[in-house]
Length: 287
Image: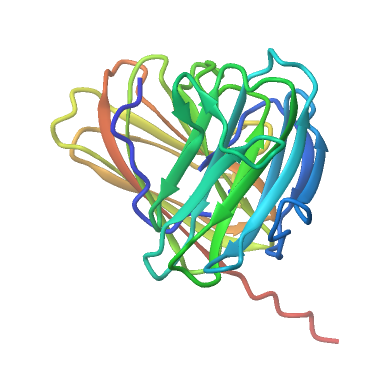
């Protein structure tokens, strides 16, 4: 099981997303959504196993609202939000009912305040039937960027032996995405990310020197197959305790990928990783 994992660097859509989901409605480019309940972005009825992903900015009087409907009261619900603020401003996300009141489940408000560079999640086994809103705001911020993902899927559900899947969103050039975690046995950590253009991608992982077992580190494609570079090298490495290694893709095509961290023989093996993308310039062929 993962414990005490924190996202340390700027992160874009931990969010958590889920494997084996059909595509939902999404907006991968940043834009302004409705500032009130009446002008909220209308997502419509959420479909089972679909993931809904949005990228936007909030700050001060600029709020973002999303309106959606749940048709089955027994469906679980989860969301995650990556706060990409470069100015250390928190972003708050709240689930509201049809009247705009914060939803309460199990005695707690469905609310999360997320610090800059961090990812926050909300998950409930049953949200209920009806119309709901998501409200995103940053009272002291200005144009604070975020990535939002939500679905009718419970985060705690085991997925391919993984305790959770973290969505880093679309990688921005020359920005480091850092995280720490623990893996072992059936607990596999997966970090989903996208690149929107031909890119160089470098992923480094450090295995804590106090670990007892090796950690395997790899980059997977959308079908969860290990990525192979143009020269035939697979993006996979195995690290002993105290070691650091890097996976480097000189020309990674646009698309969806995963970082996978696992330790088949281990238990609570601690790691840190850093992920960086840079653009690749393609020169046209001479006439």
